[in-house]
Length: 373
Image (cartoon, rainbow, N blue to C red):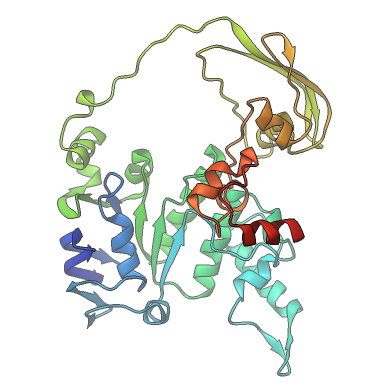
């Protein structure tokens, strides 16, 4: 089987700092290649070049027999190159079917969207992929795993031939990850060429055929995943044996400090109690829909509870809302970092300090706008 994608000698620099150095790789139809490497190795820059978001300084890209010195986003889409990022690139206020057909709507006449046709075609598409969601659902109602699956369905609707997946399971639970893995296997059988990026080595060995290892912008190793192991892959990524840089320590926990008692609410959580000792990492396990997210949102005060108290060192600190939670030292890192965890149009400084209600960094005009809003 011939290559559907070849990149040869790709180089890229930003402000004089070279982030890709003479990188080459090949991809066949029905093949999954994995890009491995530490943060800053150049993986994201490489896929941005393939999707047309960045222009290489040097090198060639050959796709389906045609060679390009650079790609544009329009060319990439026309050739069937689709990138799926860990933060879903969807319109939350629109329905599932609207997102599938976004930019390519089915019309009644010249001006009206044929919603019925779009929903029916979306239903057939989702059914063919065994995806458990309704075309009429709003995207904001979907779980992170469903949003990732929807991006894949959208890519197939766009007749993707090369699929680039950048950390698709970073915010998914175990069951959602397993579902996504099964879906990727289906795509391989359909003949798509897939470039897969993940920090989870188990995923690479489950899905991948070949791992290309990037280090400091250079392609340092090509490994056939069925003929290697995790230790060899880690050594190629970091330059030393895994045993030399990671040792799991054993620590004794202290006295019981935090206690949650009789939490109920959110339509699913019923009479949950637990305690956490000092120096202890306490984990919540369960399948999708078991109530893990609902429980922590109630503990944080983001959702209303029917019952439940939170005590620290014997003192009741039960938050009634997120503001009171922050004041009492209770914080939540949401699974939806893009939608709930950050103000994407504000600066890093503002995001770091906004929870403390510190307005000192706003200009006078900004304060006026905020007060008027």
